[in-house]
Image (cartoon, rainbow, N blue to C red; front, side, top):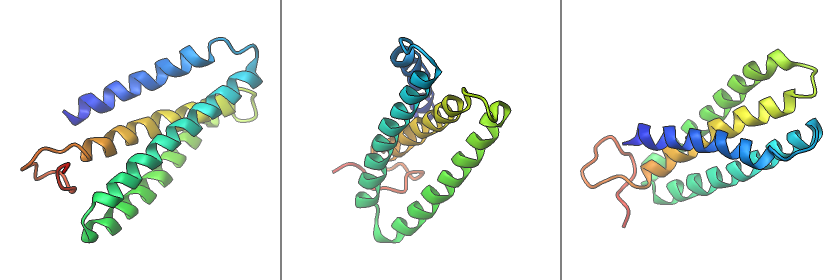
Length: 130
């Protein structure tokens, strides 16, 4: 079920960018819109991460923190690579922000899936929802 949630989140993210930024008049407006969408996605990620940290058993908190820090480094490196083909162009900020947003939405969906594990799911490091 987790892959379905993540795939739906990715589709929603890309569609949301197209819908919300479609009326932008120029590249600066599109870049600004993409940056705003990244900020919103990052806020949702921080909420999911915070909730997961609160629910995680003490022994799991350090593992979750390490995993999140390493994921951020991977996300940033991936998006630097993806946007490198437009280096110096006016579209690069949009490509970079869009990549970060897509990966952030995917990670948020994954964290949220951990918050909704069923009783007995041994692949879930967090206790079931109270």
